[in-house]
Length: 206
Image 1 (cartoon, rainbow, N blue to C red):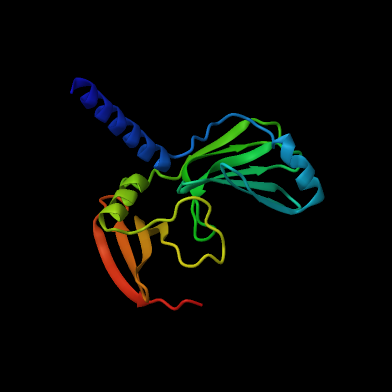
Image 2 (tube, rainbow, N blue to C red):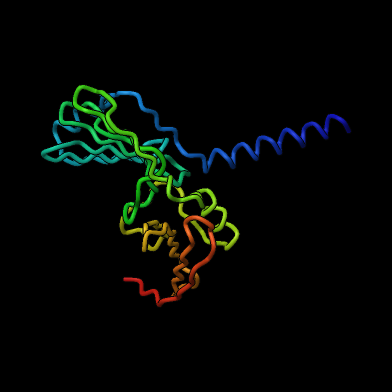
């Protein structure tokens, strides 16, 4: 019986650890880095490059001023974004949501000069005392489904989370499909988490 009890406890711990791992934010540090040399051949030949890997989805876009690298881990709500100078040295890096639209910077972002010196550190979460993790808990309590992992264009409607400063006050906005033909938009106070409004609108699948 004692062994059975210990086994059950172990399984619970493993299960809890796995659940936490699925929603854990990837860690972004302030260390200088250069673009992975494995990707350089693709970048030299193409302006845009994307690839599905065993661990997630990579997107690289190059223009006349910089190179954008984005990686969305499997089963994650987050996307790692790194912008590089054309000499392949890091310019800035941080996290956004995994959606390809209406996203915003999350947590601390780091910016570097061309010599690799850290010149700026911005905490984009600071105004929002009602944190993103608390927004996720709110969505879970309201049975609002969030899409994990790579979310690509043309894959239908996905719950969208936005945030902004409105009339000098931080707010969260959640838009989700409440019914097959109904969207609900919920506005939360970015400091207290209080529900400020709920509004329904018709959803038309184009």
